[in-house]
Image (cartoon, rainbow, N blue to C red; front, side, top):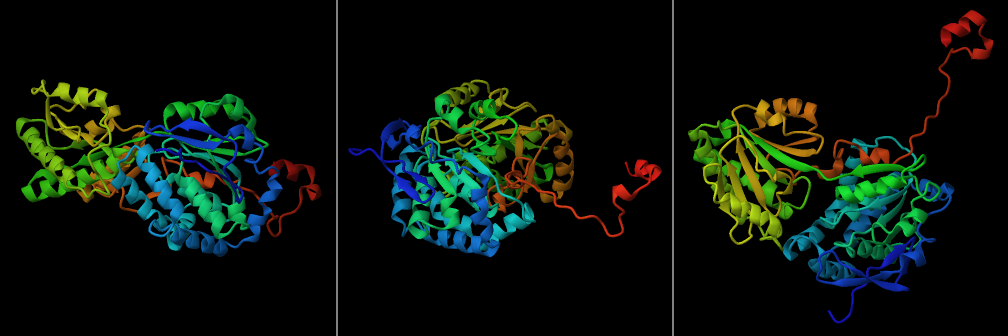
Length: 473
């Protein structure tokens, strides 16, 4: 591109495009310009917590009014800011253009009034006090900035969003829309969006302080989350949405007929392929209670072939051939082709994704790195064999048939499993309405206040005799 794109800073109703310096996009295909972080650092923090008071002049319905109207204005067909950001994100995002465009097209639905009301009823419930929060969002999908600003608005908090280098444009486009739509609205005035290079300690040591913020909500890789911990101290809390992995459990009944095999394959392919396996909730390992004898393994290989076929048929706005198949992963997958006694590898020659069927109850050695539409199917004899693979890093567990769910949910939850869904519905349900990653981030973003009045008939301590006071204590 002859003209370098700009990652705008949008701070409390002001669009900033001065003092520009160059940064590298993580996609490697472009560099972009953004305001020098050191030139805007004094504008990012809100300052006194008393300045949150204007948000408390809003009723909850007025907050919903604002978010509902904003959602309508984010229509990709009508919003020039979003169109520009979408085009630029084709170059920086880990997903391919059809998938990126799909994210943008579906973003207005996140601002649905009843969806947001349900999110609050299900989590926060009663009115709490918002906090001054910094959101360090990940770049594996362009919806996380939108989710962060929604969470900030409904909790009546002040929101600073650090955008990632592989999605530097989306959240700024939303914020520019907010400035154009309602520049003086309290929700607009309590949003700051900017980019700075993670790990810039001279900058972060000035910003990440308790008198500037009370919460840091950190998404992303283990290294980036661990880096933030050095700034945590009394008065500054870390809410860590660290990397997770997801798996599926399939009962033996799901393999009993060709019809059931096909349905199971469609469900697995959807949970693996959606978004090209870039999300924590994408399935990467499937345990099938098929038995480890020759008959069970052969049924699983048949299932694996169907999974591959169905994954290749997914709509382009859900899944495509990966933008860049990880070469180290491909080398590992290709190496298994020469180990036919232990593995059956289906597909993957062209970097389009692959299904690896283990012939024993052990996953592949590199299961932590499965990505780019690559899934490992593993035969087991009993459910108990699966539980050792479930831990605190396990987020979504897809289950099929559904009558297996109560048992799986009980046993796997004891080992650390956090979200249980019907196989095939990892991305087609309430989504981020409820708890996330085994915690309730919306509640933790709030400051919870206790306000008490004495119960009727309770005598004050100063009126009690010595023996009575001891009993109360």
